[in-house]
Image (tube, rainbow, N blue to C red):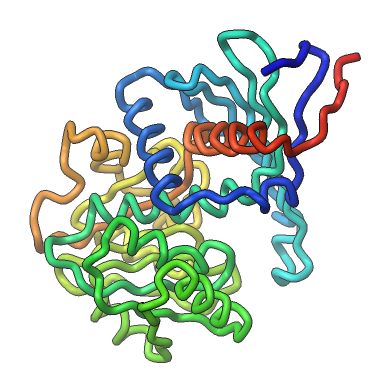
Length: 329
């Protein structure tokens, strides 16, 4: 980029909202980041976490390096009001990228859209790797940011799904899920479900994206043989993890930091059988038999944010979006 080392391109929420990117492009970008990590060419250290005793907020800091793009980045995430309803919460997340060839800054951006795309793409990759052969029915629990894009991404990686189920309670959220599905797959529709145990028994793939205050909690005994249950937010009871035949995670270390609400009565989490980057690299299979009930944990890895953030920075630079700030002058 034609800038000196005193300037930084700042990309706001509105700058990024104007960039078009296909679901397939997002999935490919995220998948490549996992392959590079599995090959040992990228670095993804464990995230740092700060949380007060009363649990009203949580903060994360994540540093990483993408070995294909030669980009170093740090992501910060801060959520306040965890003890309140969704409308009273505050959430801020940023990503700052540096070119590790030139040594110059690339961009600093709001990371909310990147996360809103990266996370359902990861869930869709988990579903692709973990779903039993011939999977036809998917259930999404929750209608927030992650729930709204879960089905479009799922159909991108598992196009043969023919029955789509949705469990949620917020009318605006339900409408938003339907609108996103119609925007990407206008010939598809989703069934709203009121009986969660029956829907869970019918589902080959379950993606739980609900907020912390959801009453939904799928139990292990509701799952049929061969079912895959993917946890993004909330909506799965701990029994789905502890009773699983196989446990897959994007990162076992990250699961042990952010998945403590799924611990058993003694505060323990079961070992992870395989991490997603290894499955994507084809070094090992996530599913080893058709009848296995699989629990998959989607915690996100910063290398995927870096890859997708760099893609957005490229698109923004091409369209001359953003504000040049002389931060170090």
